[in-house]
Length: 474
Figure 1 (cartoon, rainbow, N blue to C red):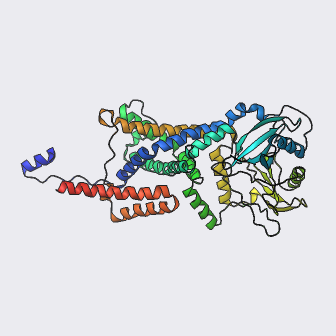
Figure 2: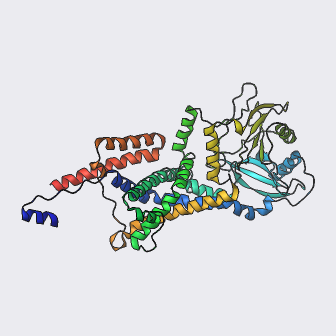
Figure 3: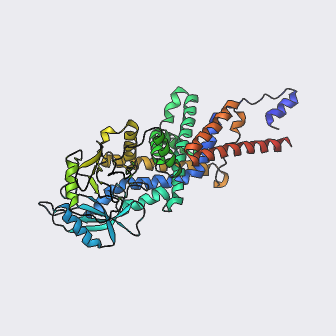
């Protein structure tokens, strides 16, 4: 019995009941804590590897400078000749898959091959000086973005801890729960803002310099988190689209609503059309299909046919027919702003354009998806985009580290601190309980790794409260 109850009993008066606490704020606090402790390490790895990935393109330009630059000046060799030079390097070990002509003076042409031993979306690239024909490099590249070995290695860690499909589940867990943690944290911050006196609200927007201990950590954690909340939610939402389970659900939903990204049809006669994926180049998409016997002389003619239509940028990829009876594809791959990803399909026999897709014809959702993906990859605005992404990722890593440090410092004798008190749902009205379960179930349909773990958390929380109530009653 508490001291207040003792005094009340001695005086013969009934102890006053404790004021009823709101149920939503304690629930958000416990949810924020649970996700932060259990999923925080995965978010930390994703954030740090994401920062490294964002900075990797600038590093690659220096690290692979010899392979990426072409010192010779003068008239370019025909693409056919450049392809034959590259084929002479690989021999019969690999099949010709695509060609990316040098986009500007001083850059090399990439001739891409499909070879045994490569992972999904990887190609063997032979880099040729378009003027002298000198082979400047021979390496593995990844996806539509053309990631070189450094960025590819970072990407494998970022999206799957280097463990393949099993590791990708951890990445999906981090991307999915990141949004939940952020929303719960924003809810807690709003609660503190509403209850704070007007003169002290500024302290919620910046760290308290005079604070010490856990309060100082909380000040940094909360103020940094509210400034980075929108960016973190953006990374969570766009990152989910690459995931295995939720990504497939998002694709199906977009298809059902007619929001899919248009694809250029390579069908000649009655052959099926090919599909173009907006995620190409990151997360398991974007490897050019291997062609059979291809006449190198057609690369120049097919590119010229595309230039006569909508292909008007330097960054293009020319893909031979993936199978007999299908067309060649000339695809713009310029992902900076303004976005230029037009594509044309060309009949190799007649050099007639049989299909064309322009970015201007994309629907609003398809355009937003393209822009969101390119912002996430850091290609939309070049170096500025990459620096902002790196800063955002480092900020998220700092928030996670501060939260884990708070948890550790709150415990006695430097042991991990206790969880926020369970049982918030016991104070909830029936509609509140129903709303939480409904939200969890709805999330489970779209984001399986979030929704069903959230429902499990709610049920476990209720069982703990029930067991505690029985124990106290006994």
